[in-house]
Amino acid sequence: MVEKERTKADTLNSRLKQQLTDYKVPDVLDYVTERADLYELNKTVRMWERKVEIAHMALKTNRKTWRKLQMVHQEQNPWKI
Image (tube, rainbow, N blue to C red; front, side, top):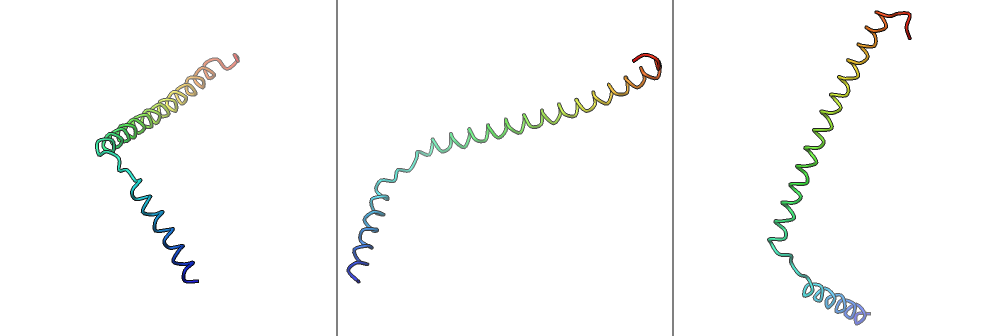
C-alpha cells in the first residue's frame, strides 16, 4: 500500500519536473508587442462603437425630419396620396 503511493508520488513528481524543464517563457518583447496590439485593437473597437452610436443618432434625426416633412406635405395636399 505504502509502496504504491510512493511509486505514484514519484511518477507524479517526475512528470511535474519534466513539465518544469520543458516550460519556455516567452520573450518580454513579444509580450509587450502583444499588449500594444491589444491596446490598439481595443481603441479601434471603441472608436467604431462611437461611430455607430453617432450614425444611429443621425438616422433617428433624419427619420424624425422625414416624418415631419411627410406630415406637412399631407396637410398641404390632403387629396393626394
